[in-house]
Image 1: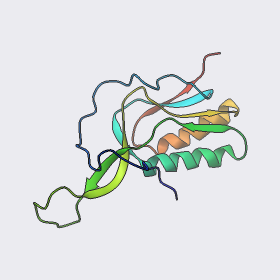
Image 2: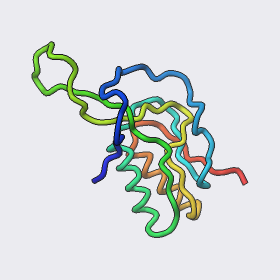
Image 3: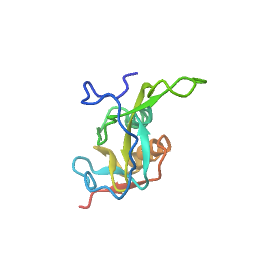
Image 4: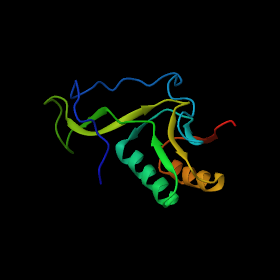
Length: 138
């Protein structure tokens, strides 16, 4: 299982930060004819993205093409269980993408509408946020 993670980072550990506002980038379909749009704010882990991507791939069988419009580059650290206070910040545990409302997560093309909708619906169940399936205007 190849999890998404950056090859090289400028800073190994980041502050948590706060996700606020709505997305301004990647809010329109640019590649495919169907897309999965975020309706909430959450951290999406690399594992969740990979799981949703695999669901779509499996559903598509041989036809169609998929674009993943998000990439987890924010490191999340964690310390071991029952570690006493002090001793600094924990080691990097996994990577996340802080998603905002309005962001396109996946785009797919080359499928019939009902198949595309079903693939995206299943993928949305793998994600921790509310989503909406959108279709390109003709």
